[in-house]
Image (tube, rainbow, N blue to C red):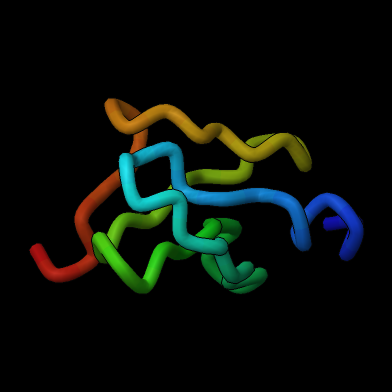
Length: 56
């Protein structure tokens, strides 16, 4: 993933925390709400309905 894009992406939830990339799982991770957003074909899917809770 392009580092410039990763630098501006944030969680779509109300807190808007920065996201980090987990390249092994192909997910963007939010440390505030503990959600993992999928990256499909190089495109981040930042929909709350598509995210999974990592703690579950």
